[in-house]
Length: 144
Image (cartoon, rainbow, N blue to C red; front, side):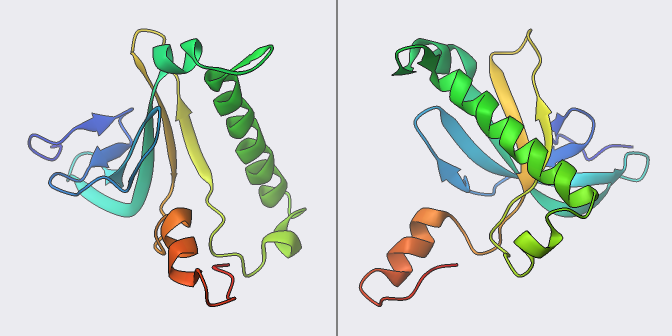
């Protein structure tokens, strides 16, 4: 039994209905989902931030002479994947110790039949970087 009427993404992530977007950008939005722990009971787990990006718009947007916004996203995915791989091998534990604002990529969902590209990431409870910077503006404090 799955949550009634809930949008389920890739059989792992359930959209939290009624929650406002966590953030919006030029190519899409970040929405709150929860990890589906048990599909039979509908039990949900940790919050997940899912970035839904418009693939066609990113393909049309040039970010350099030989690059598009979609290329930039794939570079972001590669960097987040390298961080996750290094962390599972213990290489970056010291580098990320105490850095609560570092998010992890849980999954990149790239279905060529879908208009959107989805990036599922751990949810940073402190809010967006933009909001953190705004809170610290003029104080001399760093948000990290």
